[in-house]
Amino acid sequence: MRGAGECVVLAETKDHQNWELIGLIAEKCSGDQITVLRRAREAIGNDEDHHLLHTTGWTRELWIKSLGLPAVLPPPEEVKNVETKIGASRAEQARNDMLRGKH
Image (cartoon, rainbow, N blue to C red; front, side, top):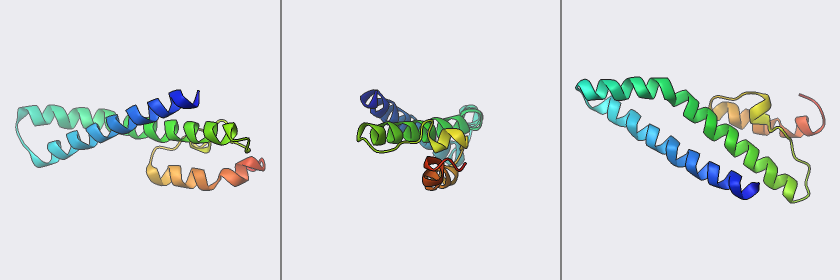
């Protein structure tokens, strides 16, 4: 399960990077084709952040559990339904409270 999680995190990281590059192109270029890229980036960009942040949280907690340490499952990113890197950081910082049953 952890190995599969690592593969998904790797794929989501690459996917996220590709969407960032599409966003950069959409910002710096012009023309009809760029309009299509801008629309795609606006429509999909937030989903890509969500996927990467949540997948990373699940994989981290599964590794923690496999090491015999207390894990938060579902992970804080999932419980708090984070959508940004800042939200993910705050969720991860809340792990200890979640382990003690304080959401």
